[in-house]
Image (cartoon, rainbow, N blue to C red; front, side, top):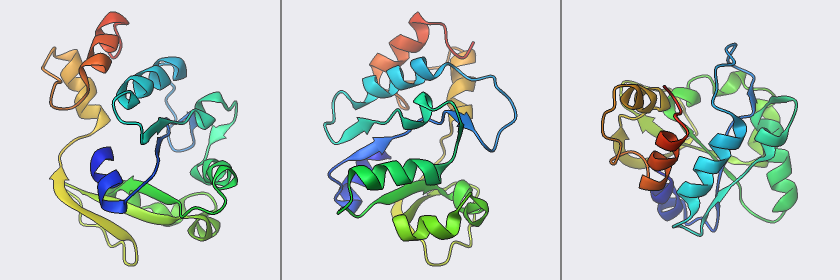
Length: 167
């Protein structure tokens, strides 16, 4: 999906931003921020346009996309910034913290997801095959010792096995 976004939007950089302390989830059963940023770094090794972003992981506060966008805009003041989300997130986008201000900071783009029929009028869509993929599905495959080669890079799969993550 990242490669497709880079190509379709002609991006110079695509930041991969793992959530720190999520605003929308109550559970705290997460793999550590250190492990998640390490996996993102491994994913980004083969594509210089992919960049890990640790803003949220390093924050001690609840993570809000608005705050992260402010930092990215500050770092790239003369750039067009895209916020790329899945169609599942696009359905409740208007409920996000400071949504009205976010539309002035970036252009929202979403990937369609199988099983969703979003009414996201005005949002840009990346035309792509429907991705039937989620982090929940990948975690289930790990628990069931199913192959992951179609979903993640081999280096990340090795990291997950070595550190016994998502078991």
